[in-house]
Image 1 (tube, rainbow, N blue to C red):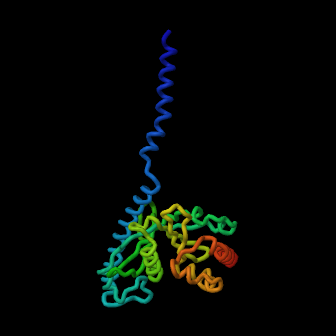
Image 2 (cartoon, rainbow, N blue to C red):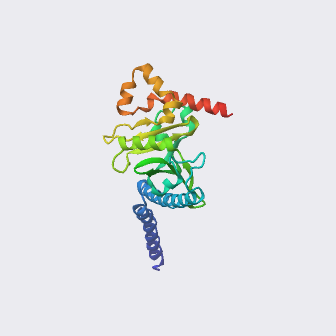
Length: 245
């Protein structure tokens, strides 16, 4: 006749465990920052490993020469022996539909692509970028290049970044052929953006700045509010999508 209270007690214990399990799991769950750091460490290891193999192959196959169209800014492939993988950063992008729709918060629209890029440097000078992506569950270096972009990125990151560049995000709008460096404010203000050379050229930002008289301000700190390039970005995305069709 005590069976019913016992069953109720067991059911109550099971319910308590079911309620507490998610809380326990949540307490041990990694934060987005921790996940990104882990991902970055794995991607960095792949970049270092891949570059060592790339450099060795190039020096064996093309010693004393520089193949036409070589992706890194060196005078001779032998220069690769003194080059190394420096810091890296994840690549973010914005859905063109959000841009065309006129959404105003450029920062919140930016989402990770799953791709990382790592600066390749020689004598503390950027000579290009290694692109790393996770393929079939394994991080791999898939390409080298971007010698000009590496110099542009490095200069802006050194100028605007904190010690570990955690206040920065690299955002590429593929459909506008435009790159931006998002700079978070330590005071909690809205982030601002440094247009890289691709954006300055694609969106004609330098010409627009001269016309509006804001060239001096842009030259002084290199940062813009998203509202200052939103219309140009939207027009570029629309035009490129129309041309693609």
